[in-house]
Length: 452
Image (cartoon, rainbow, N blue to C red; front, side, top):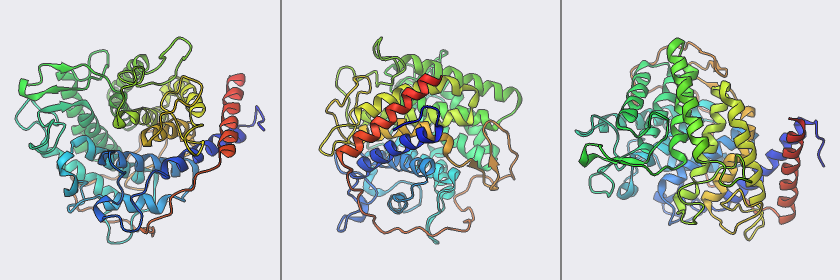
């Protein structure tokens, strides 16, 4: 089944496994069916929150980029456009009652991925991926600080929502990563300034500690003098890809500064979110809830973002790839063993260190497994683009033409047509096919280990 020294065969087996998991994930997306209200198109069924759909579409764009499988593109494009809101800034009124800065950020990160990988633009007359990302940035800037703590974004956007008095690391990490990626894409120094400002504020208040631990948040009614020291894996994930992007983009002493920050974040995260037991070396877990079985629907998905952004970091900051790859490889092997359950026989469980399916299924579990498996294919993705359509190679500084000051009215590039009609839900693959694919993946890992 597997030739130990055949890298192409090994890659094909991993691609086959990601295809199976992506089918399982997409089978849970039903809000593009005939008769679904327009406000629900592109979202996930209750009780899942609006933000997680944006996270799913970001992962599915990665899947397209890593595998060249475009079968889901019509559904992805339709979803990304369905939730832009009246002002094309991912603030749809239907979701005001729970809309956070972090929620909005996940949709912006998805369109940034579309932008950077050259995913087909939306049909003529639609906003471009760049416009959407810049519009989100432009809505976040006026929310900065709002009279407390010397800066920082609040968790919630509107005062009538619970959490408005909380400034959390994931909202600020999302804003930071958006700024860093727009800086690299556009060459605009405004975005560089904001990336520096957000980082400086986050470290000053202590949400990122001197040893690079990333803590959940702080109460702005107390002027951010007290921290909630809870740690979730998606928090350092957002920051580490931002620091890696700044490393990739900058020169000289700034480059070394961002390299040090990237290294610090990785070392801290690897000490917190990996190695749950002595016999589970380098396997990722959600430390705050997974071992005690208290994770909620949001938290089931958090490992997806650490997997996603570690994989991407290994490309734009390749000096650290040798420290990232063992973590992703061991975690992917565990995830493959966990993706053998559910009614179809190919749904993924939560725990990657048990050696089998643990009975826990859902969107977050599938998304997390997909992200860690496809992180092993990240080198297959197209090279990241800039606004000048210049290809940026890993860790190379590319000078691109200057962009105007951030605005919501960029000129649309020529668009490749993309259907916005609903696509069929992916059919579940058979248990035998899933088992064979997982076996091939595990053989691939065994061959990789034997040759290392």
